[in-house]
Image (cartoon, rainbow, N blue to C red; front, side, top):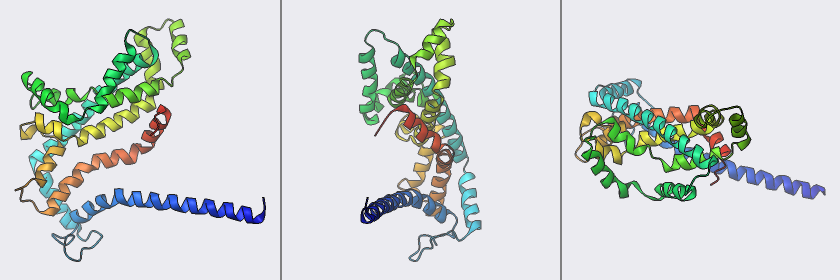
Length: 286
């Protein structure tokens, strides 16, 4: 290759790299600026962040502490935060249990109407929540499960997304592992519990994190099922600060939103590599 060709190639690679970095920085700013602005409003003097000449950095630690104290002193807010931890954790664990067992069967065993049943299960991906929320709410109400843990959690445990994700992940597990375990005398459940689950650990962690975050941010279904303020999750409680007629200062509203976002932010910071690795290993492409 001539000297001119080498320079042209290096220049082309450099331009492509610059363009990718520009897109990455823009996307990063889109994701981080709202979080930073919430933090800025919370830890600023009352009204200063929303004035005609706002500052782009926090100006008052004492103001932030006062805002946090004001929100956390609301007993129902703390109860809603604990409710969300309970709802989200229980939902994630039950989804992992049900979806992993079903995915194990769909991925490695043939049974009558397997493909049809799998297709029917995946139809749930095409149904928006608004379509099924009314009939599901009536069933839950007829069972006397309003304002209860099972009423909020159980309808969310049938996750078509988790089933699809884990089925694709388990299809990547070599059948030879199961055959070898069967030759050694392992039963059907033992193979699932001792072979399939440990091998699919990355996929299980990934789907568990995603389901936890989805359950934490869920708003419509808990709003329909929880009619008592003591049963509200954090998403419904925070929405009350934004409601028409709610006379809360902007700093208090932002403080409530910031506190509610902390678990999701922590989960992302701690486990984003596991999520990316799990999606890559599952064989699912966008």
